[in-house]
Length: 369
Ligand SMILES: Nc1ncnc2c1ncn2[C@@H]1O[C@H](COP(=O)(O)OP(=O)(O)OP(=O)(O)O)[C@@H](O)[C@H]1O
Ligand SMILES: [Mg+2]
Image (tube, rainbow, N blue to C red):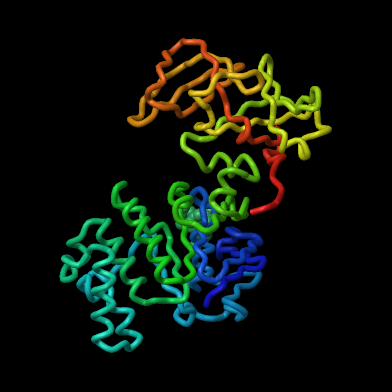
Protein backbone atom coordinates (compact mmCIF):
# COMPACT_ATOMS: atom_id res chain seq x y z
CA UNK A 1 0.00 0.00 0.00
CA UNK A 2 1.37 3.38 -0.85
CA UNK A 3 -0.53 6.53 -1.43
CA UNK A 4 1.87 9.46 -1.69
CA UNK A 5 0.86 12.93 -0.68
CA UNK A 6 2.82 16.15 -0.96
CA UNK A 7 1.18 19.05 0.84
CA UNK A 8 2.45 22.55 0.04
CA UNK A 9 5.89 21.04 -0.44
CA UNK A 10 8.71 23.52 -0.81
CA UNK A 11 12.34 22.96 -1.72
CA UNK A 12 14.87 25.72 -1.37
CA UNK A 13 18.41 24.58 -2.17
CA UNK A 14 21.28 25.73 0.06
CA UNK A 15 22.27 28.39 -2.47
CA UNK A 16 18.87 30.03 -1.91
CA UNK A 17 17.22 28.87 -5.13
CA UNK A 18 13.60 27.78 -4.62
CA UNK A 19 13.02 24.87 -7.03
CA UNK A 20 9.52 24.30 -5.58
CA UNK A 21 7.51 26.92 -3.70
CA UNK A 22 4.36 25.10 -2.70
CA UNK A 23 3.56 21.90 -4.51
CA UNK A 24 0.55 19.75 -3.62
CA UNK A 25 0.04 16.37 -5.19
CA UNK A 26 -1.99 13.33 -4.18
CA UNK A 27 -0.86 10.08 -5.82
CA UNK A 28 -3.18 7.12 -5.33
CA UNK A 29 -2.10 3.68 -4.27
CA UNK A 30 -1.04 1.64 -7.36
CA UNK A 31 -1.30 4.65 -9.63
CA UNK A 32 1.17 5.38 -12.45
CA UNK A 33 1.86 9.09 -12.30
CA UNK A 34 4.19 10.84 -14.75
CA UNK A 35 5.82 14.17 -13.93
CA UNK A 36 6.23 15.96 -17.26
CA UNK A 37 7.84 19.28 -18.05
CA UNK A 38 10.83 21.02 -19.61
CA UNK A 39 14.38 20.85 -18.27
CA UNK A 40 14.74 22.58 -14.91
CA UNK A 41 11.04 22.63 -13.99
CA UNK A 42 11.59 20.62 -10.80
CA UNK A 43 10.73 17.03 -11.79
CA UNK A 44 13.85 15.40 -10.30
CA UNK A 45 13.61 17.63 -7.23
CA UNK A 46 10.06 16.40 -6.60
CA UNK A 47 11.08 12.77 -7.07
CA UNK A 48 14.12 13.17 -4.81
CA UNK A 49 11.90 14.57 -2.06
CA UNK A 50 9.67 11.50 -2.28
CA UNK A 51 12.73 9.21 -2.28
CA UNK A 52 14.24 10.96 0.71
CA UNK A 53 17.38 12.00 -1.16
CA UNK A 54 16.49 15.65 -0.52
CA UNK A 55 14.70 17.14 2.46
CA UNK A 56 11.63 19.33 2.19
CA UNK A 57 12.31 22.87 3.35
CA UNK A 58 8.58 23.48 3.91
CA UNK A 59 5.34 21.52 3.74
CA UNK A 60 4.72 17.81 4.29
CA UNK A 61 5.15 14.43 2.68
CA UNK A 62 2.97 11.45 3.60
CA UNK A 63 3.00 7.80 2.59
CA UNK A 64 -0.52 6.65 3.36
CA UNK A 65 -1.15 8.46 6.65
CA UNK A 66 2.41 8.46 7.94
CA UNK A 67 4.53 11.62 7.84
CA UNK A 68 7.73 10.96 5.95
CA UNK A 69 9.52 14.31 6.31
CA UNK A 70 12.05 12.95 8.80
CA UNK A 71 12.21 9.32 7.64
CA UNK A 72 15.57 8.47 6.02
CA UNK A 73 15.62 7.17 2.45
CA UNK A 74 16.50 3.57 3.34
CA UNK A 75 13.43 3.28 5.58
CA UNK A 76 10.95 4.40 2.92
CA UNK A 77 10.42 1.16 0.94
CA UNK A 78 11.04 2.93 -2.37
CA UNK A 79 13.29 1.86 -5.23
CA UNK A 80 14.64 4.49 -7.56
CA UNK A 81 16.05 4.38 -11.06
CA UNK A 82 18.18 7.41 -11.75
CA UNK A 83 18.74 9.57 -14.79
CA UNK A 84 22.42 8.54 -14.46
CA UNK A 85 22.45 4.86 -13.64
CA UNK A 86 25.17 4.79 -10.93
CA UNK A 87 26.21 1.13 -11.12
CA UNK A 88 29.02 -0.37 -9.03
CA UNK A 89 31.90 -0.50 -11.55
CA UNK A 90 33.74 -3.45 -9.97
CA UNK A 91 30.73 -5.70 -9.55
CA UNK A 92 29.25 -7.91 -12.25
CA UNK A 93 25.80 -7.20 -13.64
CA UNK A 94 24.48 -10.06 -11.53
CA UNK A 95 26.00 -8.63 -8.35
CA UNK A 96 24.81 -5.12 -9.19
CA UNK A 97 21.25 -6.38 -9.40
CA UNK A 98 21.60 -8.65 -6.36
CA UNK A 99 23.32 -6.12 -4.11
CA UNK A 100 20.25 -4.48 -2.58
CA UNK A 101 18.77 -7.88 -1.75
CA UNK A 102 22.00 -9.13 -0.15
CA UNK A 103 22.14 -5.98 1.99
CA UNK A 104 18.65 -6.76 3.22
CA UNK A 105 19.57 -10.32 4.05
CA UNK A 106 17.41 -12.21 1.56
CA UNK A 107 18.20 -15.95 1.22
CA UNK A 108 20.53 -16.90 -1.66
CA UNK A 109 17.92 -18.98 -3.51
CA UNK A 110 15.42 -16.14 -3.43
CA UNK A 111 18.04 -13.68 -4.71
CA UNK A 112 19.00 -15.98 -7.57
CA UNK A 113 15.37 -16.37 -8.59
CA UNK A 114 14.60 -12.65 -8.52
CA UNK A 115 17.78 -11.66 -10.38
CA UNK A 116 17.20 -14.25 -13.13
CA UNK A 117 13.57 -13.22 -13.43
CA UNK A 118 14.44 -9.51 -13.75
CA UNK A 119 17.24 -10.27 -16.23
CA UNK A 120 14.87 -12.26 -18.39
CA UNK A 121 12.27 -9.48 -18.41
CA UNK A 122 14.91 -6.92 -19.36
CA UNK A 123 16.64 -9.17 -21.89
CA UNK A 124 20.04 -8.95 -20.20
CA UNK A 125 20.44 -12.61 -19.20
CA UNK A 126 23.52 -13.12 -21.42
CA UNK A 127 25.19 -10.11 -19.76
CA UNK A 128 24.99 -11.18 -16.12
CA UNK A 129 28.71 -11.93 -15.78
CA UNK A 130 29.91 -8.70 -17.39
CA UNK A 131 31.08 -5.53 -15.66
CA UNK A 132 29.31 -2.21 -16.32
CA UNK A 133 32.17 -0.85 -18.48
CA UNK A 134 31.60 -3.78 -20.87
CA UNK A 135 28.01 -2.67 -21.55
CA UNK A 136 26.38 -0.13 -23.86
CA UNK A 137 24.47 2.80 -22.33
CA UNK A 138 21.15 1.12 -23.00
CA UNK A 139 22.29 -2.13 -21.39
CA UNK A 140 23.51 -0.26 -18.32
CA UNK A 141 20.19 1.46 -18.05
CA UNK A 142 18.42 -1.89 -18.07
CA UNK A 143 20.71 -3.14 -15.31
CA UNK A 144 19.69 -0.08 -13.27
CA UNK A 145 16.05 -0.96 -13.91
CA UNK A 146 16.73 -4.56 -12.86
CA UNK A 147 18.25 -3.41 -9.60
CA UNK A 148 15.06 -1.55 -8.72
CA UNK A 149 12.82 -4.33 -9.96
CA UNK A 150 14.18 -7.10 -7.74
CA UNK A 151 13.51 -5.02 -4.65
CA UNK A 152 9.73 -5.31 -5.09
CA UNK A 153 9.20 -2.05 -3.19
CA UNK A 154 5.93 -0.27 -2.31
CA UNK A 155 6.89 2.63 -4.57
CA UNK A 156 8.90 2.81 -7.80
CA UNK A 157 10.51 6.13 -8.58
CA UNK A 158 11.97 6.50 -12.06
CA UNK A 159 13.86 9.50 -13.34
CA UNK A 160 14.07 9.41 -17.14
CA UNK A 161 14.99 5.71 -17.09
CA UNK A 162 14.80 5.33 -20.87
CA UNK A 163 16.73 8.41 -21.93
CA UNK A 164 19.81 6.48 -23.06
CA UNK A 165 18.02 3.94 -25.21
CA UNK A 166 17.67 4.09 -28.97
CA UNK A 167 14.22 4.74 -30.41
CA UNK A 168 13.22 1.10 -31.02
CA UNK A 169 14.39 -0.12 -27.62
CA UNK A 170 12.69 2.81 -25.93
CA UNK A 171 9.33 1.76 -27.35
CA UNK A 172 9.91 -1.86 -26.33
CA UNK A 173 10.94 -0.80 -22.81
CA UNK A 174 7.91 1.49 -22.50
CA UNK A 175 5.73 -1.52 -23.14
CA UNK A 176 7.76 -3.52 -20.62
CA UNK A 177 7.41 -0.85 -17.92
CA UNK A 178 3.69 -0.63 -18.53
CA UNK A 179 3.45 -4.40 -18.20
CA UNK A 180 5.56 -4.27 -15.02
CA UNK A 181 3.19 -1.79 -13.46
CA UNK A 182 0.30 -4.00 -14.40
CA UNK A 183 1.77 -7.15 -12.87
CA UNK A 184 3.42 -5.56 -9.82
CA UNK A 185 0.38 -3.55 -8.69
CA UNK A 186 2.68 -0.92 -7.20
CA UNK A 187 2.69 2.88 -7.17
CA UNK A 188 4.95 4.32 -9.89
CA UNK A 189 6.16 7.91 -10.10
CA UNK A 190 7.96 8.46 -13.37
CA UNK A 191 9.79 11.56 -14.56
CA UNK A 192 10.23 12.47 -18.21
CA UNK A 193 10.33 15.44 -20.54
CA UNK A 194 9.13 13.20 -23.38
CA UNK A 195 5.43 13.83 -24.00
CA UNK A 196 4.97 10.60 -25.95
CA UNK A 197 6.34 8.59 -23.03
CA UNK A 198 3.98 10.39 -20.65
CA UNK A 199 0.95 9.81 -22.87
CA UNK A 200 1.79 6.13 -23.25
CA UNK A 201 2.51 5.25 -19.64
CA UNK A 202 0.53 7.46 -17.31
CA UNK A 203 -2.73 6.96 -15.49
CA UNK A 204 -2.35 10.66 -14.73
CA UNK A 205 0.13 13.22 -16.01
CA UNK A 206 1.35 16.12 -13.89
CA UNK A 207 2.55 18.95 -16.14
CA UNK A 208 5.08 21.21 -14.40
CA UNK A 209 6.64 24.55 -15.22
CA UNK A 210 9.13 26.48 -13.07
CA UNK A 211 8.31 24.38 -10.00
CA UNK A 212 4.56 24.93 -10.36
CA UNK A 213 1.99 22.31 -11.38
CA UNK A 214 0.12 23.51 -14.45
CA UNK A 215 -2.37 20.68 -14.76
CA UNK A 216 -3.02 17.19 -13.43
CA UNK A 217 -5.15 14.80 -15.44
CA UNK A 218 -5.48 11.67 -17.53
CA UNK A 219 -3.53 11.67 -20.79
CA UNK A 220 -6.81 12.28 -22.65
CA UNK A 221 -7.70 15.25 -20.45
CA UNK A 222 -4.25 16.79 -20.74
CA UNK A 223 -4.23 16.36 -24.52
CA UNK A 224 -7.87 17.24 -25.30
CA UNK A 225 -8.63 19.78 -22.59
CA UNK A 226 -5.40 21.63 -21.81
CA UNK A 227 -5.74 24.25 -19.12
CA UNK A 228 -3.48 26.79 -20.79
CA UNK A 229 -1.27 27.35 -23.84
CA UNK A 230 1.80 26.01 -22.01
CA UNK A 231 0.19 22.59 -21.53
CA UNK A 232 -1.34 22.68 -25.01
CA UNK A 233 2.03 23.40 -26.60
CA UNK A 234 3.97 20.85 -24.56
CA UNK A 235 2.00 17.91 -25.96
CA UNK A 236 1.46 17.19 -29.64
CA UNK A 237 3.78 16.66 -32.56
CA UNK A 238 4.10 18.86 -34.55
CA UNK A 239 2.93 21.32 -31.89
CA UNK A 240 -0.56 22.80 -31.73
CA UNK A 241 -1.20 25.81 -34.01
CA UNK A 242 -2.46 29.14 -32.74
CA UNK A 243 -4.40 31.88 -34.50
CA UNK A 244 -5.11 35.16 -32.75
CA UNK A 245 -8.53 36.71 -33.28
CA UNK A 246 -11.81 37.57 -31.58
CA UNK A 247 -14.97 35.90 -30.40
CA UNK A 248 -18.11 36.87 -32.34
CA UNK A 249 -21.77 36.04 -31.85
CA UNK A 250 -24.27 35.87 -34.66
CA UNK A 251 -27.68 34.23 -34.78
CA UNK A 252 -27.08 32.31 -31.59
CA UNK A 253 -23.78 30.94 -32.87
CA UNK A 254 -20.41 31.72 -31.38
CA UNK A 255 -17.58 32.17 -33.86
CA UNK A 256 -13.86 32.70 -33.90
CA UNK A 257 -13.01 35.53 -36.29
CA UNK A 258 -9.80 36.78 -37.78
CA UNK A 259 -9.84 38.93 -40.92
CA UNK A 260 -11.88 37.12 -43.54
CA UNK A 261 -11.84 33.91 -41.50
CA UNK A 262 -14.85 32.90 -39.45
CA UNK A 263 -15.12 29.49 -37.77
CA UNK A 264 -18.35 28.41 -36.08
CA UNK A 265 -17.49 26.98 -32.67
CA UNK A 266 -19.32 23.91 -31.44
CA UNK A 267 -22.61 24.26 -29.60
CA UNK A 268 -21.23 22.66 -26.46
CA UNK A 269 -18.82 25.60 -26.08
CA UNK A 270 -21.68 28.14 -25.94
CA UNK A 271 -22.23 28.03 -22.21
CA UNK A 272 -18.64 29.03 -21.52
CA UNK A 273 -18.18 31.52 -24.36
CA UNK A 274 -21.55 33.31 -24.54
CA UNK A 275 -21.69 37.04 -23.86
CA UNK A 276 -18.01 37.60 -24.60
CA UNK A 277 -18.21 38.90 -28.16
CA UNK A 278 -15.19 41.05 -28.98
CA UNK A 279 -12.90 39.27 -26.50
CA UNK A 280 -9.40 38.74 -27.94
CA UNK A 281 -8.63 35.03 -27.99
CA UNK A 282 -6.21 32.48 -29.37
CA UNK A 283 -7.68 29.61 -31.32
CA UNK A 284 -5.71 26.37 -30.85
CA UNK A 285 -5.84 23.76 -33.60
CA UNK A 286 -3.85 20.57 -33.32
CA UNK A 287 -1.84 19.48 -36.34
CA UNK A 288 -4.08 16.47 -36.97
CA UNK A 289 -7.35 18.40 -36.88
CA UNK A 290 -7.78 18.92 -40.59
CA UNK A 291 -9.94 16.47 -42.45
CA UNK A 292 -8.67 16.08 -45.98
CA UNK A 293 -11.57 13.81 -46.93
CA UNK A 294 -14.57 15.92 -45.98
CA UNK A 295 -16.07 18.57 -48.25
CA UNK A 296 -15.22 22.05 -46.94
CA UNK A 297 -18.28 23.72 -45.41
CA UNK A 298 -18.90 27.32 -44.39
CA UNK A 299 -17.77 27.96 -40.85
CA UNK A 300 -15.45 24.94 -40.79
CA UNK A 301 -12.95 25.86 -43.47
CA UNK A 302 -9.56 27.48 -43.64
CA UNK A 303 -8.72 29.17 -46.94
CA UNK A 304 -5.04 29.64 -47.43
CA UNK A 305 -1.86 28.97 -49.32
CA UNK A 306 0.28 25.87 -49.05
CA UNK A 307 3.74 27.19 -48.23
CA UNK A 308 5.56 23.90 -47.78
CA UNK A 309 5.00 20.17 -48.22
CA UNK A 310 7.17 18.01 -45.97
CA UNK A 311 6.86 14.23 -46.45
CA UNK A 312 7.61 12.19 -43.30
CA UNK A 313 7.11 8.63 -44.54
CA UNK A 314 3.61 7.64 -43.47
CA UNK A 315 2.31 11.24 -43.44
CA UNK A 316 3.19 14.67 -44.67
CA UNK A 317 3.30 18.02 -42.93
CA UNK A 318 1.69 20.92 -44.72
CA UNK A 319 2.89 24.43 -43.99
CA UNK A 320 -0.23 26.52 -44.51
CA UNK A 321 -0.58 30.32 -44.53
CA UNK A 322 -3.90 31.61 -43.23
CA UNK A 323 -4.65 35.28 -42.61
CA UNK A 324 -0.98 36.12 -42.19
CA UNK A 325 -0.15 33.20 -39.89
CA UNK A 326 1.81 30.04 -40.67
CA UNK A 327 0.24 26.78 -39.41
CA UNK A 328 1.47 23.19 -39.72
CA UNK A 329 -0.91 20.31 -40.31
CA UNK A 330 -0.30 16.60 -40.56
CA UNK A 331 -2.15 14.96 -43.44
CA UNK A 332 -2.07 11.62 -45.22
CA UNK A 333 0.67 11.02 -47.74
CA UNK A 334 -1.84 10.64 -50.58
CA UNK A 335 -2.96 14.26 -50.45
CA UNK A 336 -1.49 15.95 -53.53
CA UNK A 337 -1.13 19.62 -52.65
CA UNK A 338 1.72 21.62 -54.13
CA UNK A 339 3.70 24.49 -52.71
CA UNK A 340 2.11 27.81 -53.64
CA UNK A 341 -1.32 26.29 -54.25
CA UNK A 342 -4.40 28.01 -52.75
CA UNK A 343 -6.66 25.45 -51.10
CA UNK A 344 -9.55 25.09 -48.67
CA UNK A 345 -8.97 22.78 -45.68
CA UNK A 346 -11.79 21.45 -43.59
CA UNK A 347 -11.02 21.69 -39.87
CA UNK A 348 -12.44 19.72 -36.99
CA UNK A 349 -13.87 22.63 -34.98
CA UNK A 350 -15.22 20.18 -32.40
CA UNK A 351 -11.70 19.86 -31.08
CA UNK A 352 -10.65 23.51 -31.35
CA UNK A 353 -9.25 25.12 -28.20
CA UNK A 354 -9.96 28.69 -27.14
CA UNK A 355 -7.52 30.57 -24.90
CA UNK A 356 -7.50 34.08 -23.50
CA UNK A 357 -5.19 36.04 -25.82
CA UNK A 358 -3.16 37.66 -23.06
CA UNK A 359 -3.08 35.14 -20.18
CA UNK A 360 -3.10 31.95 -22.30
CA UNK A 361 -5.68 30.36 -19.94
CA UNK A 362 -8.23 28.12 -21.60
CA UNK A 363 -11.76 29.53 -21.71
CA UNK A 364 -13.09 25.97 -22.03
CA UNK A 365 -11.34 24.35 -19.07
CA UNK A 366 -13.86 23.36 -16.42
CA UNK A 367 -11.48 22.20 -13.72
CA UNK A 368 -12.10 18.51 -14.38
CA UNK A 369 -9.16 16.16 -14.67
N1 LIG B 1 21.58 21.19 -5.63
C1 LIG B 1 21.01 22.24 -6.24
N2 LIG B 1 21.29 23.51 -5.87
C2 LIG B 1 20.71 24.57 -6.45
N3 LIG B 1 19.79 24.48 -7.43
C3 LIG B 1 19.46 23.25 -7.86
C4 LIG B 1 20.04 22.07 -7.30
N4 LIG B 1 19.51 21.00 -7.91
C5 LIG B 1 18.65 21.48 -8.83
N5 LIG B 1 18.61 22.84 -8.80
C6 LIG B 1 17.78 23.73 -9.62
O1 LIG B 1 16.41 23.43 -9.37
C7 LIG B 1 15.66 23.50 -10.57
C8 LIG B 1 14.94 22.19 -10.78
O2 LIG B 1 15.90 21.18 -11.01
P1 LIG B 1 15.49 19.68 -11.33
O3 LIG B 1 16.73 18.87 -11.35
O4 LIG B 1 14.42 19.28 -10.38
O5 LIG B 1 14.87 19.85 -12.78
P2 LIG B 1 14.29 18.75 -13.81
O6 LIG B 1 12.88 19.13 -14.08
O7 LIG B 1 14.54 17.38 -13.28
O8 LIG B 1 15.16 19.02 -15.12
P3 LIG B 1 15.84 17.99 -16.19
O9 LIG B 1 14.76 17.61 -17.15
O10 LIG B 1 16.89 18.85 -16.83
O11 LIG B 1 16.40 16.82 -15.43
C9 LIG B 1 16.64 23.86 -11.67
O12 LIG B 1 16.56 25.24 -11.93
C10 LIG B 1 17.98 23.47 -11.09
O13 LIG B 1 19.00 24.28 -11.61
MG1 LIG C 1 15.83 15.81 -13.89
